[in-house]
Image (cartoon, rainbow, N blue to C red; front, side, top):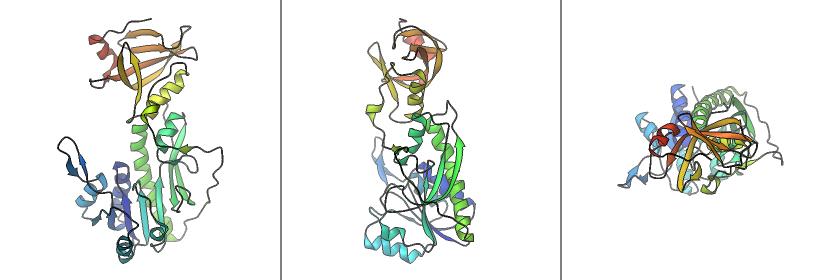
Amino acid sequence: MSLRIVFMGTPAFAVATLRRLVEDKWDVCAVYTGPDKPKNRGMKLLPTPVKEFAVTAGIQVYQPASCRDEAVLDQLRDLAPDVIVVAAYGKLLPEALLNIPRLATINVHSSILPQYRGAAPINWAVLNGDEETGVTIQYMAPQLDAGDILLVKTTPIDPQEDAGELYDRLAVLGGEAASEALARLEAGTAGRTPQIYGPQYQYASMLSREMSPMDFTRPARELVNQVRGLIPWPCASTDVAGVRWKVFRAHVGGGTAKAPGTILSAGQDGIAVACGDGKSLVITQLQADGGRRMAAGDYLRGHPVEVG
């Protein structure tokens, strides 16, 4: 592979793309990632997941506080990349940087653009109960996620798959797509499809804790999607007998004429709660405040819940 690549990424999602580029023998001459950050009780400075991988792969790592400094831009010019590949870098990139590589600056985005531009595309696809999602390789533009599309890879979403599980799958798919995009750029066969962003498309805004509380007047399937879509953070939550639960697994149960929020049953198979559409939501995995994540049946052995 003759293209000279600079890679820019920070979290675990980006590692899958960088790993695929290394495995496919692309010439990754440098990696740019976020600064080391203090974590855990000792507040020890820890490297980003991308830095950890790059170091083990023997790739030069740079961690600028900003990509707008002229010294950083000069450094990139000296590296003379053919392509810059960006995957969840976490910093705004100036137009001057986007124009440095000989061929293109491309981005791995975890949705089928133009749907779900923004910060949390994976979560919103699950929250909305979508049956399909994918990754888009786009030419980067100064506006957020607005660049022309180079290629798209799609994948079905399982009705019980949560956002964390989908994140892991799309990370791998993103690596495949990035490597394929580089091959097209190298061969001169990479096309461009402009995005047309209209009112039918949703912006994937950042998640917040305000999205956590579960409203049992909603349909059971919507609550299942809320549980799936808010993993691993901030998680769907509900209060039962004064105890707050984070809910990690749930499915749609049988029909009921009881009022929404009524606990219909509580046993080894889970805790069934009446919902607003006349169906029940069965909670099968939860975490009470101060406790650990566990099966609902195991929780009930030490914390009985009153039915009705």
